[in-house]
Image (cartoon, rainbow, N blue to C red; front, side, top):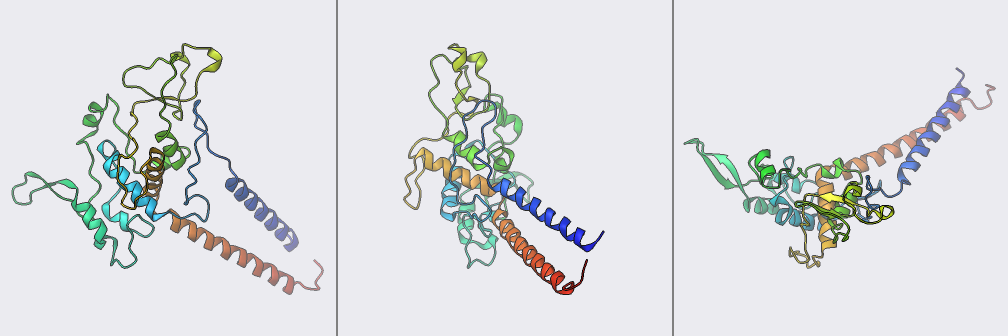
Length: 291
């Protein structure tokens, strides 16, 4: 293979990579599969290749999770110290390390976690420390299912990764509870949500051509206006709380997201500079040489 052919192949590869990146960045809003409405766009600050998390929003989102969601949903992969890692809701540039963060220590101390007495071997409850995982609201999956109509609430540790649409899906779902149409048959334990995937045709008694979008969800509407009091004075509307907790769950699902983006941008800049230097070197070395 000649050098000219090799350079032509390299240029084609770079063009294809750029086109693929362009397509991924230009992707439209995600759709809720199975007949749900198109997901709402939360306009989150962390979206896009240069996005970063809003620390104030993460703090508000943690408060919604702790005071509302944690009553049913676990976050088994989260430790209290993670809240103080760089980019986290309680990161402090002056902290010695995440485990020594004063905010995290205070937040953990408010929570009781199960432990074993080292002298008697008996189960005890103690104040949590930054090294502890978030406590599970139920002792096991069977107890969780029994307390929730036979369906255990899902763990939220990586929920934004597990659902198409990520934070927009969570935000949409939490704001998607509406009074059901009169022609829709709802059984006990079911709740109508316009963003929930599902097929309502078997339960629709109206015109077959006008089956409503959405589906049934076992979780009742968990939020109501003013349910929490934000420390920064932000109004705790259902829309605001939904957006804040969606952002927090998105961060918890990938705490290193911003650092990874920044590293990726740095690598791309390096590759572009390297490609430019390589091309100039090629032109200089082969200048005046027929090939």
